[in-house]
Every structure is written in structure tokens, then in C-alpha cells.
Length: 593
Ligand code: M6R
Image (cartoon, rainbow, N blue to C red):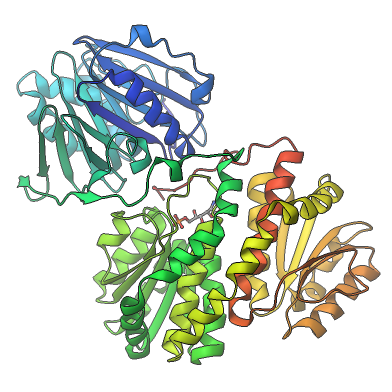
């Protein structure tokens, strides 16, 4: 009985043009590795199908490029949660007759029925993946149809989510199709690309088409797009990307995570620079709505939680903060005059897309705060606020988290009718952000990293705005260093978690002008139980064993207080021998539920 291999995200690419396809595909896969890194594979046509695939990170796989000739190719980098990370399960997957190859990002929910159906027709399965049914369906339909019609008929059979790139031996083209998984087209000079994300081809072209749901594209010498739902050929606009390869490269930094932490002076400026009109419009929507929900997952959820404190203190508004994956529990409360603000770096997170769709079905308005241009969420929204952080490659959200905070803080100020004040307040942070991300500040924080690198647990506490910061900081430490870290509201400690404190347990205490007195009280409770106290805030205190000074920035505190912890998490990862850009079990965007 085959078991389900749950593929949460992967990166795919397809190429047709005059260049050697294997080279283009391999380079593209390297830029997509943040989407998955347990195995990879390439197929090219010469015009016969040539395939190479294996387990391991892309730079560890010894692709023999001589054995991958031709100008048409597809490739895949995979990320699986369970099931075999084996050579057989790597993509591309090939049909029984060896003529059709498929790469897939997403999950085919009805693959077991399809497999049984195909087995009854004599097809044999060699892998445990859901994807293998696709090339075999196409093979079956090609007995009576041409390649395109066979693909269309096969797609009709699929339930679930997919971005697919497909080639057929002897035909110089790639067919690609998307539903609930991202896919973009790069339009070059006599060459075309399809990929899960723009960095895969930005080196070759900055012209991009963002495919819509159920779009199917054929690339060869020309480009043709069909929408399978509308059952007709369609035209999609070509956009120009305003960032370049340099921004998607590591430059002088050892890891993307550090580069992206260090980039925050620039990303915060960029997030501040635009959106004035849109922010004003959204602030009116907030003021007009009967109920406003802020939804997100992971770090984006923490940004929402942080924003709710700002809306409360500045605009005297209560916004309901809900985890996108839990939003269905509130569905019955959504009405036509509800407003849902969806926050997502990628704009492709399945939980958030589903929450937004269900809110729209109930007639609610949707505002999205997104970083990735053209992503699915951008098309589901009545209003869109772009974060403008530039590409974030590291799996961990760092610069995009602070950009989300910038946009949400501006929005809270705008809702209170104090937009200019908010903007000025965030501008005041820029010099501080420059200082705290500098090599000097990083060296200072390294002393702390060395002291606590062998800890089993780290606890983090804050009150008010510093509470969501404590949650986000704990997530950062956990994700990348695998040290157990937990954030609490300062007042909650005595209700249970204090039982965990032993001699030497590191406890990070976030303070601010507003919360200092109570936080020092909490710090002394911890100290009395032997904790090693790390203070982060505007003023040092005798109780602190280590202190990181962070300027007092009122409603903008959350933006500058998280940065030292991003650096700490990065350094802890390095000191513990973990790869900061490839945290185990994680992937950048989680495109299935
Ligand atoms: O792309 P999104 O903002 O929707 O992603 C949400 C989360 O998956 C993401 O923030 C995740 O928690 C990151 N690994 C945090 O570093």
C-alpha cells in the first residue's frame, strides 16, 4: 500500500531557448533551493529524454552536464516532511513509456484513486510520490490526443494543488500549469522560462508574467497562455522587475540570513517610501468596518499581534488577531461589513489563501500586506499594501518581519489620523537600525551567543508591545538554532512557566519606558530562581547579567527590539553547527495546508 509523501513546498523551473537548458535549469534551481533542499533533478530533451536526479543539496549532487544536452529542460528541488527522501522519489517523474517527464510543486490529494485507476490499466508505479500519476495520465491520454489535449485532460482529473512543468520526448516545448501553487513566466529574448519564483531566471530577464489560477502556458519559440477554467486563450500583462540578481545573491555575506538582517536599514526605508495613498484608503476602510480581523501565520501572525497593540493605543480600535489556520472557526462571524487584513510575506501561504477565500465568500472586504509581487494573495484583495522589502531568500523571516511592522505601524498611525507622525517616528529609527546591524554590534552580541549556545532552554518575556516581540524572538531562536525557546507575557510567568527556571537558565527580558517597572519585577523573580538575565531595552539594570541597549521608540519599539535577537539566533545557529539558510524541516513558503 503506497503511503503519502507530503510535499509541502518545492521549487520548479522550465526553460526553452537557445542556451544549454541544463545549465540554465541548474542555476535556476540553486536560487530556488530555499524552497526545498533534500533532493533535486533535471530533465532535458535532445530530443530524447535525458534525466539526472539524486538526493542531497543541489551543490552536493554531481550533475553530469555532458549527459544533459539540449535547449529544453525542466528541473526540481524538493522538500518532503516524511516518506522516502530517496532517488526514486526525486523529481522529475517519468511515465511508464519513458516519454513524458513532470516536475511538481504541491500535492495531488486524489493520487491514490488515480493510481488504482491507472494500475487497472496496466501502469506500474516505481515511486511513493503523488506526482507519478501525472506523467502516466498524460501517457494514457496521448494514445488518442496530442500532447496539449492530453495534459488538459489529465489536469481535469487532478484534485489538490499544483504547479507543474511537463515535457514530452520529441517535442521542443514545455507545458506548465498552476493551481494553488505559485508559477511565473520569464519572457526573454527568444527564450522563455517558467519557475516557482522570479530569482530562478532574473539573471536572464526582468520581464515577468504572473500566471493566474488555472492558467496553462506553452513555451517554445512562442508563448501561449490558456485559462483552463475559462476554456480559452488569454493574455496576461508583462511586468518589469525593479530589483536585480545582486539583490537575490549573498554578496559578501556568508549566508542570506545575515545579509537580509543587515539589509534592514534599506528595507525599512523602502517600506516607508510608498503607499501613502493606499495606507490612507485602508485606514478609512478600518474606520468604516464593523469588525476588523488581522490574520497571518508564523512571523506574519506575530506582526499582526504586535499591530493590534498599536491600533489599540493609537487609534483606540480593537482588531481581532487570528491565526490564519484557525480562521475557519470564526467564519460564521464574518459579515459584509467585516474587513480582513491578511499579512503574508510570500502571498502564497495556503492557510492564509484559504482564510481569505472564505472571508470573501461571506462578502467581507480583504486588504493584503504582501512582499511578493504578483503572488496569489495580491489577486484576492480589494486593497493591496506592498511591503517592498525586496527578495527574501533565507527561510527565516527577518527583514520582511520588520517591513510588515513598518506597514502596520503606519496604518495604525493613519487610522488615528496621525500618519505623518508615524512616518517620522519610523524614520528616526533608521540610524539605530544601521548601528544595531553593524559588524560592531554583531561582535558584541556574539559574546552573548557564546555564553548561551549550549543552553537547553531560553525563555523570553515582555509586556504590551514587547509580548509579541518575545514570541517572534522565541520563534527565531527555535527555527534556526533548535534550542527550545519560549516567549511569555511577563505577567504570565508566575502562572506556570517559572517552574522551568533553574540555575543559569537564560531569560531574555524586553523592557520599554512603559513597562520597565513591571519587567524589572519579573526579572528579579527570575533572578531569584538562578536565571541568567539578558536585558533588552532603553536602560541597563543591576539585575541584568548581559544588556543590549535598544533605543526607546514607543509604538515603533517592536521594529528595533527584534533585530538583536535575529542576530543572536543567527549566531547561535553557527555556533551549534546549524545551517542558517536551510533550517531542518522548514521551507520558505508553505503552499499546502
Ligand atoms: O509567507 P508568509 O508570511 O505567509 O509565511 C508565514 C510563515 O510561514 C513564516 O512567517 C514562517 O513562520 C517563517 N519561517 C518565520 O521565520
